[in-house]
Amino acid sequence: MTAPPVSLLGLATAVPPHTLAQSDVAALARVIYRSALTRYPKLADVFVNAGIERRYSVCPLDWFAEPHDWRTRTQVYLDGAGALYVRAAQAALDRAGMTAPDVDVIVTVSSTGIATPSLDARVGAELGLRASAARVPVFGLGCAGGVSGLSIGARMARAEPGEVVLVVVVELCTLAFRGDRGAKADVISSALFGDGAAAAVLRAEREGAGLRVGAAAEHTWPGTLDIMGWTVDPVGFGVVLSRSLPRFVERRLAAPARRFLDAARLTAPQFVFHPGGAKVLDAVEAALALQKGTLRDEREVLRDHGNMSAPSVLFVLERVMRRGLHGQAMLAALGPGFTASFLALEAGQGPVHG
Image 1 (cartoon, rainbow, N blue to C red):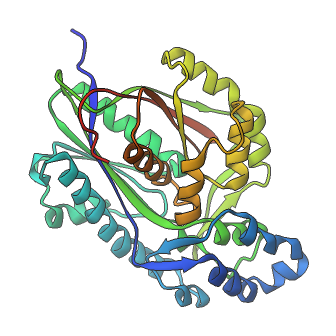
Image 2 (cartoon, rainbow, N blue to C red):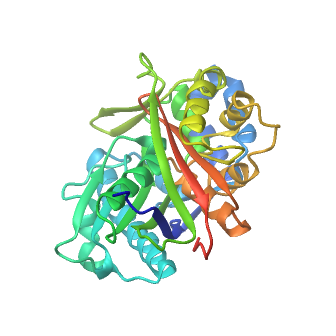
């Protein structure tokens, strides 16, 4: 018996309370990273060329001017991520016309902090989740987590038709800002990353309407562990971000993307990409032979929110859905591994709540 299609019933996003204007971050970076910017003065251009005007953070800007250890950063993560989790999840459930007790499975994606018990357990009572709901916490996917998390949720929904699957993706990238390191990657990350969360409600149903979630695939390139990721020390996470990333994307993305398009039978789909940075979006357009500027929604999310890691692509999808998504789409993101994650979407009849 063929499994029923998976419908995306509701999608919502959330940002924390503190706005970081790019000009203010650049001014603070000139103080914190004085040594690095003296050695590499052109590095300061990243704040101008990143295509970002503002970002959001769980902490005010002056918090980053002081040193913080692992314990402090972890407590901020637990509090800040938990609050964003509840807001995004509740909004997605509201848009789907459901309540927390309706949820059978919760998939939680986050790579910017460590929580055991996991975030879903910490906020379950506040959100109103059933004690019998299955919890699936996922760590380590980085920027690919939005696409991979939605894919995992869809597979679980497909395996148990009729069950409601809630996918929550939350990242606090700003907690990795490190004034004690001062490497090039630290300066660049302080110019790019912000905090945010997104949530989606999925269910496999025969009479499904709206946005359908289809085939999924991943491709991990061997020998690429040094392109993106974390190091860990007593202070916290340290960003690993290779300057070769845009060039790698331009040269290597096309082949696995085309294989996925063929396998998923996507013809002339709309592309919805994770906005990792201005240069990365240029590289994606070049790799897929898209006209420069095609990824307009991605650049708008980058401008208004920075790179929030895993939730970013769902912010783009929400924007695309609000404008009206028609026909087929390919959701895609790149993350540590180094891995490309792909997901097929198709707009059907009926409302899509995003």
